[in-house]
Amino acid sequence: MYSTRLFRLLEQVEPPTREALIALLEEFEKRSEEIASGREIRKIWEVLDRVGQELQELAEAQKRTEQRLEELAEP
Image: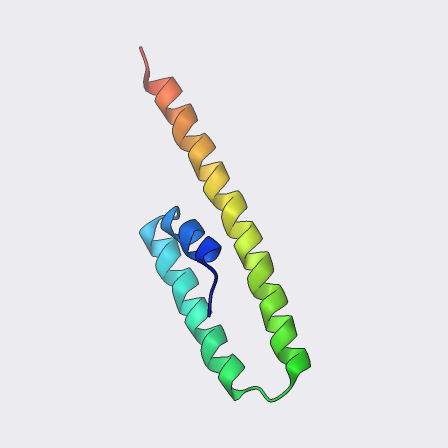
């Protein structure tokens, strides 16, 4: 149901954050099965798309932070 892009992004996030996001996705999946309206399902997918974009930005920021920490740790 979810794209491989989303799974790749999840792999880049710290485990506690990843677990929270997976729980959120599971809840969306559960709710989407219960929702009859196509409009509501589209709204959910729009939210998931935004979450994916934010997740990508978070992963990029995390990489920059790790790079900066490595630079600071160098003698």
